[in-house]
Amino acid sequence: MAHQSTLIADNIEQYLHEHENKDLLRFITCGSVDDGKSTLIGRLLHDSKMIFDDQLAAITQASKTQGTTGEEVDLALLVDGLQSEREQGITIDVAYRFFSTDKRKFIIADTPGHEQYTRNMATGASTAGLAVILIDARYGVQTQTRRHSFIADLLGIQHLVIAVNKMDLVEYSQERFNEIVAEYRAFATQLSAEDIRFVPLSALKGDNVVDRSDRLGWHQGETLLELLETVEVSRDQNLTDLRLPVQYVNRPNLDFRGYAGTLEAGILRAGQAIKVLPSNKVSRVDRIVTFDGDLDEAYPGQAITVTLADEIDISRGDWLVAEDADIALSSAFEADIVWMHETPLEPGRQVDIRLAGRSVAGRVEEILYQVDVNTLEKHGAERLELNAIARCKVSLTADVAIDDYARIPGTGSFIVIDRLTNVTVGAGMIRGVAEADASAVGEVDWAGFEIELNALVRKYFPHWEAKDLRELLKG
Image (cartoon, rainbow, N blue to C red; front, side, top):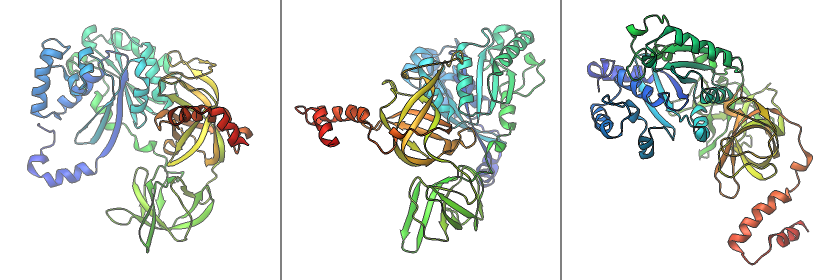
């Protein structure tokens, strides 16, 4: 592998030091089927000289039997590694790849374009700060283009790069590029993302991916890699609202009790006054401990252990916030839920909600509306099928701190766990506090309970009647 930086050969220690302090950008590639997402990632890795010689030799050989690009090396095989992906020439699962340049480090998520893999695309987008949305220059904005743009926007991705691919198949036409830009801008009025860039390219030929192309000389903007290297994502972090969900209580000996977690938002400083939620107990930060030594202050994304000046009962799932923070505590909220399981979501059935390190029993009380991800229209629904997205009302059996996902994704997101199988069946983004349903808190949901009880009785006591046991427990 020939890397762009000569320091690898000349001064490896200096290179490692510079590499450690580079900014990191996580981004996804998405769009319609066969728009060239995997090929684009392969081209980025190839032209930025981040492919080992044996990798290049392997995909060169594989291209002869499984490639889809004729005589040329099929760079999509770098990320489409599953046998079924290579047989069908499509992407099924999310594939992650790492590469770096002199300016920045990158983690790419290659996501599938098929509608049936919407949950996979949402999974890849959940940690991304930027989305590269590919459009085939021959076909323009497609249904899947709109769907993936909506999901990226729903998940709070603020930077969209619209890559008009396969320009070589339309004779590198500037007129065609401008038509697609106008078409997408008309659709983008329905999105909340403010930073939308456009770049014409050919992933197969390498035009405007890493290096500028004379065949696209009419485009005065940056190449795709130049956009990725220069887009400002540090400002996306919330440095105002302090949020430290406790993941683990660190008690190695009698003289140390620390509260470990990843700082999701805000700046935490030694000596700062804090409040613990949901108990509302107040204390002051004594130390900010890391493996490399104590810090004077910590920033979002850092994994830290905090010690406090006072002895307070703090458990996993509690939050450390600013002393004067005004955060709602509620047992009900509204959320956008992406359903990820073959068994449909039916309101009323009890589930476990895992939110910022805390697990609470609850249920989806009501589906307020479902969003058609192809047209962005809203309509009623009695249940959610696999890959469906809907605004729902969720009720819990205990009060929890409520954050809006748009403001603080780390504490405004949750997953839905099936109580019988412990399988993740959905993911949600909180949109605000809802009015609590008295029947959902403090009382047993006998309908949902009987469903679970029946399953357990059939498994362990096939001769019993679940309804009889339920009545016995009620009495």
